[in-house]
Length: 250
Image (tube, rainbow, N blue to C red; front, top):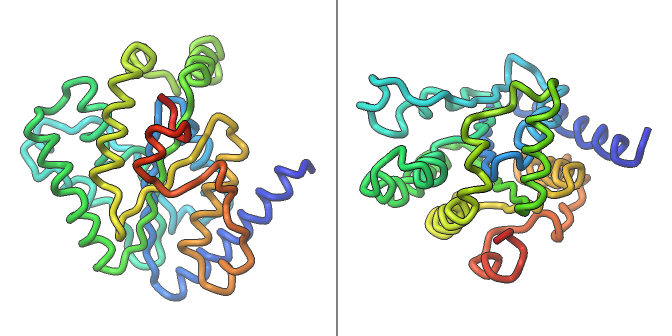
């Protein structure tokens, strides 16, 4: 096995041990995974969940809201997906659609977007105060790497199911997505719901860093103590300076 595979296997074993402990204690974990198109969300989730219990683990990627859901409180359909005791729920895109793609593509109004940015920290505070552990991760890639990955999707038949009509505008609206990301991170990074940012141009490094962070936050102390901190060159807490010092792609 390669060094990467050895390290991944060790971290996945720690995830299994963590889930066993959660099943006993009733802990609940929510992981919000956001990022640029083609930033590696699906591959990261696959490595997180590969050996976990399907009964206690869910990856949630909701489709666009129905006509009925559009009349509901915005957070309502996400609340229905929250974990019960012992469960891990990973949102592959989440309520943050309203701060990202909906802004860039005009799928919601400026007033709705402003309301979301005001309400999201309070919503997440309620989750945390209810006992849910919340991990928020932003996967960031540069423009050239995104173009390379989107091109591979279009030409590889095995990646056909990953394609989306929105892929066609990811590069065209790069600056719009950058501006939406910046606003989202600035307005919703809070002490109870902090954002961790990941330089994900190197997929394997990003996956290992994300799993390390999850374990450092969510694992019982005895397990977390065995896990080295993620490489700070790959994963780091959001700071306004990161928008201008090269850590986040422009």
